[in-house]
Amino acid sequence: MTRRLRFKGTGSGVNGCPSIHEDLDTGEVIVHGPALTDPDDIAQLRHLNEGEVPIVVPRELLVDFGPKEADHAPDIIGLDEFDRLFTQFEHSAWRLETRRRYASDELTDTYAQFMRGEPVDWTGVDAEWCSERREQVALGKRFERVRIVDSPPSPGQLYLIDNARRNSGVGEKILNLWREDADRLALPAEDFWIFDSRLVAVLNFDDTDNLMSVELITEPAAVLRYAMVRDAALHHAIPYEEFAARLTAMED
Image (cartoon, rainbow, N blue to C red; front, side, top):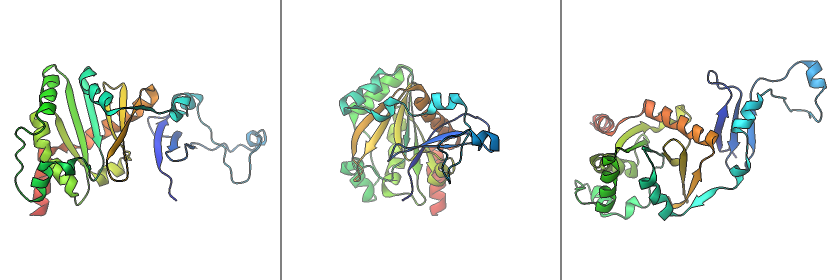
């Protein structure tokens, strides 16, 4: 079975080596870097078994990105507490959306309209949510999302491209990124929000695409890793209007 690996960090900003990854299922840590090759050095090592390769890593890499006790005790919050984050943050809220569908979308009247091929009228939809967003934007706060899209897009992804008109109307900045570009950039297949570049809320979904829980991450090195994902996604994503126009041109 192929491992599900998550990039933890690197000791080099140039060539990405040495680096640390984490197995999301087992919790095991994978380290890669320059091998220790000098025979005299290797002779001093204890318990080096056949097939094992000694790797040289700077101490700072392990301190910054190695496993910590908090890694094994997730801070899970309820959905009400999660909702409060959207009024308690100070300046920026950014989300990566990676899924092909969201079950909650498919329960709405607007989704049914869209799937019937009817133009969706977003006026008055989720009025309370829209009012809250406008209030926060009026306070000078910024909301941004990058939504990953498959080729061809799934029905749920096409719906969200249309939905972006509503989000944009209340002050959010919506961008899109092709899945193949996200894979090339090694972006994680995770949905998460970053608040004020200091707090990450990871959204955990079940096998039927329902949101089940939200995990808070505040450990600085872990938050930095998500911020690096944000920066890469923002650099390559394009505004949803331009993305939609390109998608329409491809279909013609």
